[in-house]
Amino acid sequence: MLALKKKTAALLAVCIADKFGEGLLTEDEIFGMLEYPPDKNMGDLALPCFRLSKTLRRSPVDIAKTLKDSFFCEEFSEVSALGGYLNFKISPSKFARRVVTDVLTHGEKYGSGMTGEGKTVVLDYSSPNVAKPFHIGHLGTTVIGHSLKLLHEFEGYKCVGINYLGDWGTQFGKLIVAYKLWGDKKTIEEGGVDELVKLYVRINNEIKAEEEASGDSKHSDLGDRSRAEFAKLEHGDGENLELWRWFVSVSLEEYEKTYRQLGIEFDSYKGESFYTDKMPAQVEKLRNMGLLELDDGASIVNLEKWNMPVCLILKRDGTTLYPTRDIAAAVYRYDTYKFDKEIYVTSAAQSLHFAQWFKVVELMGYEWHDKLVHVPYGTVSINGAKLATRTGNVILLKDLFREAIARVAEITREKHPDEAECMEIAEKVGVGAIVFYYLSNNRMRDINFMMEDALSFEGNTGPYVQYTYARTCSVLERVTGDVAMTEAELSDVEFELAKTLSVFPERISAALAEYEPSIVTRYILDLAAAFNRFYHECKIVTCEDEALKSSRVALTKAANTVLKTALRLICMQTPDKI
Ligand code: ARG
Image (cartoon, rainbow, N blue to C red; front, top):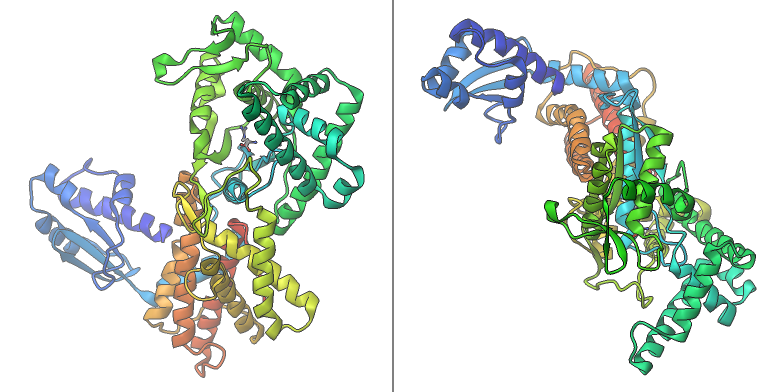
């Protein structure tokens, strides 16, 4: 559609200049004004003439009529003037031929504008906190983040995906104490991160109990011991360092299983610990620039002028904080990657944190401060239940996936008795169902996850779109020889399918511009609906008219190609059979 819109805008520009004089509207402005009429009986594209009406002091109806009489473009079968709009009807067959040929020529590259060539984007996403549960609250950062990476790669950007592991901090002091008191090597080797989480939950509960018993919410014996162990770790104590490394690797092994199910790989796992020795230089710079102020013993940057609370840089005891580390990490990443953009995907609860340290980086005079982008998202609950992290009352991502896979397997087993094959499909469909459900909404919307709805094969779900994709595969399996569009006349459903295929590049641009993978998800639903309508109304492989059959097969191939690309871009797999 983009190509046709551009062509129409260019022709209209000439036409308007000719009829009403030069310099009224540029080609780009006209392009921006072109609309898709709400009712396709009016036309497939329309130019509203109201803006021109103001400048020309003529009625929009009159302007539309004048333009209609002098406009010609062979792509349109009809041009009409209606209520201040100039409406264009596309010649279906010609248009479909051009679109489908375009898709088939570009294959899996169709839809990419390649505007990112020569540019680098760093993406910071997923980033779970080691030894704390990897729960459904992380689904957002993981799949939105990875989808944004895939979208940028598709657009030609060089991308660096960073998992900024929460692998440093006082929780390790707690974990070391808990392990020394109650832990056991073998249990953890066998049970993995779940056992670490158990220890972590237990020590938190016991600290709380101690505090409640003493009535002192700041001190407890276990709390003090945890702080001491963390201090030892920070000073390089051998035993604690070894334990810490082990905790991190046990956790990573677990996360990687989940990432594999989602088809996610990271380019870097440099977590918080990596920046420990990179913070002092930034604190120094802040101090030398006179940006640090003392506030009740802590070092802060005052952000009052920008209507934000102070940004904490050093605690009273001189230890660093979350913002300090993010600043050091951004400096390191800019020096390393010279990024054109750095994207952070986290829950909206962290929006203030990002706004604050982005401002600090600006005040520090880093000229790349405007290349930092925070992409927030809303909260997730499951079947109506809210999550609580500290108490261990959480739904783990891997359990959610496991349940989805098991439920899908029950259905798949009927058609695919071979267990290995059944499980392979069930994993792709089960995990895909959750991803699709999650990415169906605008990212800022709070989501209540309903398992039943996500797994349904009916309605706007992952299984439904994957099934549609498998359907295109099974049609294509039954044809041999070249696939090409012919001169055959096409009907409405075929034209609608071609039109849907044609807007894919625009949707990709919008998804990138708004950092919104759900635009792709919704596009997939449009495309699946258009294909299914076509599939139900038109004979494809059994069509007797050879020319028409060829065009229909080509349409199917184009739908197959675009569905595959689009699903891949939102982290979904595309099994050929379901
Ligand atoms: N580990 C953090 C959390 O789980 C998210 C880190 C986000 N990235 C960052 N650069 N701050 O809340």
